[in-house]
Length: 444
Ligand SMILES: O=C(O)C1=C[C@@H](OP(=O)(O)O)[C@@H](O)[C@H](O)C1
Ligand SMILES: C=C(OP(=O)(O)O)C(=O)O
Image (cartoon, rainbow, N blue to C red; front, top):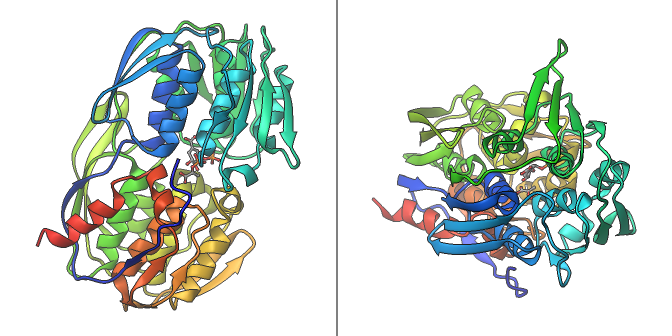
């Protein structure tokens, strides 16, 4: 896990950003590829795995529950799975670090296995709500002892056989959806998740890729009914993890707001449940072009080129939020230097991420001179019309990698340097971020 000592860093405007970069593998796909490989019988091979702390926490947990997981080269891993139903009692508490995805998805896996596991995490993760997965998993028969407010540390005792459920998602969350589906893997009968607003569908795609019997039906109201036949047998796979669009958003926004910039990010995942950020930036007038569009391991991929653009403020439709949920912090940075007003709403979920991302972004952006109104469920931002922001402040990033990276990007287009109080959490999702930003400044 990242260092206990905070590591502050300053980010300043250093002229145009130019060059071609590759961002690390998709975090969501990386977690799932380790989990499903660990449940297949035989050897799976993964390339392009994100070697960030969140994913390493998943790898350590799957090892602690019996899978053989080995790193064979940069981003290359082999996994010998134990089979669905074969997870073993871990010898000690599973340390999830900063990772909500690891925690919630693994709670699902444990819920239908004959074992008891304790989940612990860092100060940020220990504040995040787990009731949203405890509820459906309790209906399936798992037992929980959680800290007050349904938080970590918590203990899960799985039930075998678990009880299949039909679960209406009360919140648009791919983590909740995935927790229930993963619990359904070792549950007799059909586990169904009903999803009124689509969220990232990597679990569905990958479960099918591993040979699970999973169907998705979209009814007349556009509601998705995801049905998984339990007691599945998963077959080992070879997985090439595409680059993470959530990580690509940082150099792309940096290029869009910094005059004279042109940056290409190669091999970016373009799954339509993830590309809301690019659509919204384009709606603001961003010059984005896509090349080399192809499919990699069941996921669409492209190379994206971003050129400096004068962005115009927009109203973001709330139903697009799940497809850009992690990109709002950096999107707010883009809005702060756009022409006119950007209005966002329906973003209550941002208050329960690694930090309260609405509050932290509003406070931080105001501190560097942006005009921001914080509302209950969104921000309203009056942009500078392309002028740099003032900068010259130290930002509280509250153990949140995306807040830290967003203000690093903001620093590219400020009159005075922006200091981020602690950049060490960036290693949870994007260990090469600082080096990449440096390269984009140096290649010209
Ligand atoms: O399923 C996933 O891999 C994720 C789902 C999202 O969380 P929610 O399900 O809480 O929206 C996202 O914010 C997180 O970074 C990764
Ligand atoms: C919310 C995030 O991750 P997690 O929920 O896995 O901690 C994120 O990466 O922005």
